[in-house]
Every structure is written in structure tokens, then in C-alpha cells.
Image 1 (tube, rainbow, N blue to C red):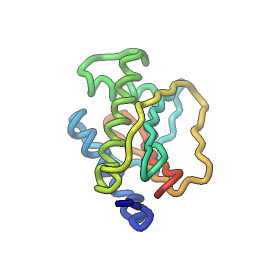
Image 2: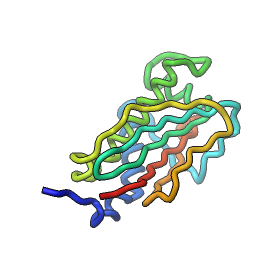
Image 3: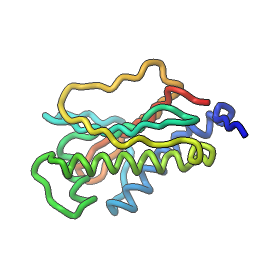
Image 4: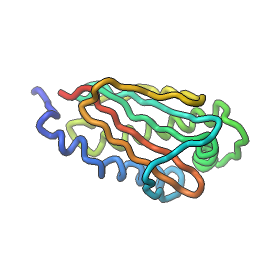
Length: 161
């Protein structure tokens, strides 16, 4: 049987699915509630981004971006350890958060959950960089905060069957 998400675009691109996914992951894994923000303006020397790709009925990516201080707070909450710099453990923690968010988001649509795989997380650190996807089918972008940790999550769909 051939599956198609094209007729369910409104369900797949529902912004509430992203908010619910962030709530689930951050409540369960970090024990915090996140508040929506109008936009996250990262004014730090270092930014950390994790990307998890989608493949199958939907191709695209889940992108998690935070400033360095937010990444340290998130990693500390996730691991129960304290961090003073973005080391490999912090990078792994941010990659795992992105992976969990991607999985939670795709689980909101049964056809997507069953017919879309995830890549392993890629983590990028640095400053003044952008991730560009040409002509996406849709893009969901929301910013959040808990305590002093600011971050944003973007779902980019560049192909939908």
C-alpha cells in the first residue's frame, strides 16, 4: 500500500505539534517547562546547532539551536553534571535533545511515524553561521526559554510524498 502525506499537510505542518514535542521532551528529560519566546537573538560568542535529518515520506530536518550558555544549562539538566565549556559531552547532549525532539515531532502523525526515519545528529559549533535550505515545502520555527536558557527549534520539510 502506498502512503502519502500530501493530503495531510495541514496535520504534518501543524505548529502545535512542535510546541507539544518541546513540552514533552523538556518536561520528561530535563524536568522543566519551556515558555515560548517571540524570537531568540543569540548574542554570544559561540552558538551550537544540532541537525537531525528526516528520510522517507518526508525529507527534511529538525534543527535545534542555542547559545553556548543555554547549551551548558541544557546539558547540565540532561546529564546531572556541571559544565564550564562546550565539550564533547555537551555536544552529545545537544545532539540527543535534537534527536528526541525530531522523534517526538514525527510521532504526532501516525503515517509519518511509521514511514520516516531519522539520521544521527550532526552538531555544529561556531559563530555567525546559517543553515540554508532552498525552497522548503514548509518550515516551522519556534523559540523557547526556560530559566536563562534560550533556544529555537526549526522543522524544515524539503520534500513530501
